Length: 88
Image 1 (cartoon, one colour):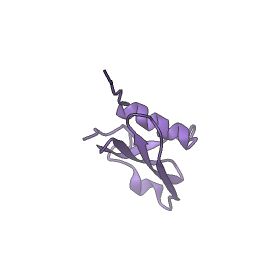
Image 2: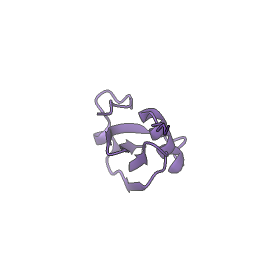
Image 3: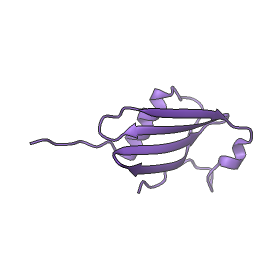
């Protein structure tokens, strides 16, 4: 019997943060989504915005992009808590 173990959204996000070596910048998850076996996250730190794809089965990060934030306060979610949104 072949059992597929899928990462939780929280664990997948942690994999992406480790991959990008984001530790002390207090990342905020602005967007998360699951589709076709991949988690898609948009995360901001004080100075950068990252976009990650994480394979839900293996934890691999097949795609990442980052760009500087000129106005970081614009990207903060509603209450600024940085809580992981639900994955649909």
